[in-house]
Structures are given as structure tokens and as C-alpha cells.
Length: 113
Length: 111
Image 1 (cartoon, helix red, strand yellow):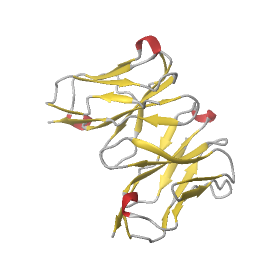
Image 2 (cartoon, one colour):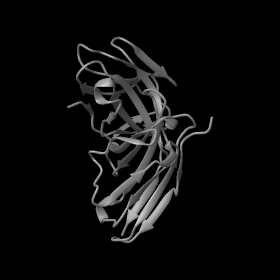
Image 3 (tube, rainbow over the protein chains, first blue to last red):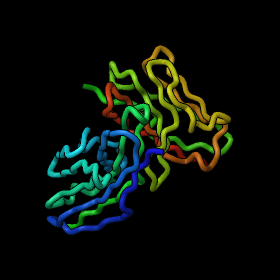
């Protein structure tokens, strides 16, 4: 079945460091891919998305490129801030999944000053 | 645009008690989802509604969990009786197309 695998955390970085959180997926067909962010005590918020191969999603300095050949959607940011501390979830959805979402287990990021 | 509303935000109950959660999706969103998020894990789908019909409830523990979406708008999720392993955050989400919008969740603690 369809699934998402994320790199395990937690990840701790110093402010202004480069961030990469790996995400790979298994799916039939061509799903849409998403990164959601969850700040402490809050629900999930959509961070960025890509709906087809080679699309690049971007928001708030974060980027991820839909790589069909490697079935990956890695999240990157060139310079993290303390305010980026949160849990990040990779997810997929598509017509083959009945528009259901499949989430990864989440990667906790802590950015220290 | 108002977001997905959920209540209560927090609930503490003893095992074998009952509890109900409420969700009001974004206006016009036909599809509504309930997820269970156990600490340290990603959300797990419990049930998906399309308007007032159930699309998928294959992962809903039907011996103790029930959900309804009368009139195709707001929804309630009930647990009766609760077990210790039901302690989790229960998230409601709604969607118009393929992008899901989440509510803040209800944190349930079963003692």
C-alpha cells in the first residue's frame, strides 16, 4: 500500500544552519506530496505541496522538490530560525488513495540560538 | 476564512468512561476526516466522510468508537468505553479538493 517514510529525529540545529529532512514515498500512480508543520500545542498546518513530478513547493524559506525517479520529497531550508522549531510531517495523497492522506511519523526539529 | 473548529481542546477521563468530540469544518468543505495522533507518531486516519456519508472507516475501532456527520456539516466522534491506549490527540480536518486543513485537535488523557 501507499506509505511515507521520514528520517527519524529529533534534529537539533543551531540558528542559521542548513536543514534537510528526508522523505521517501511508496505509491501507485502519481500522488500529491505535502509537508505539514505542527507547532507545540497546535494542529497541523500545510507548509508546502507539489502535485506532479519535478514540481517544487516552497513557503517561508522552505523548499521541497517532487522527485519521481527517487520517489523522494526532501524538505530543505538554507538558514533555520528558532521559530522553525516544530514537528514536520511528510504526507501523500491522491486519487489512487481515495484522497486519503498518509503521513510519515514526523521529525522533531529544535533550533537553538 | 474561519478555520476548522474543534472542542473541547483538552479532556481527561477515567478508563471505561465515555467521551465525545466535536468538529465544525470550513464552510463548504464536503470531505471531513478524523485522525488519531498518538504522541510521537503521525496522524492515523480513523474515518473519512463525504458530505454525510462514510467513505472509509476501515481503521475505526467500531466496538468502541463511533462517528457521525448529520446534515453533512459538523461531526462528532465518540469513544465508549475509553481505554488507556486511547490517550492521544484527535484531529479533525476538512478539504475541498486535495489540500487538508486541520483543526487544533482535542487532547484526550485516559487515566
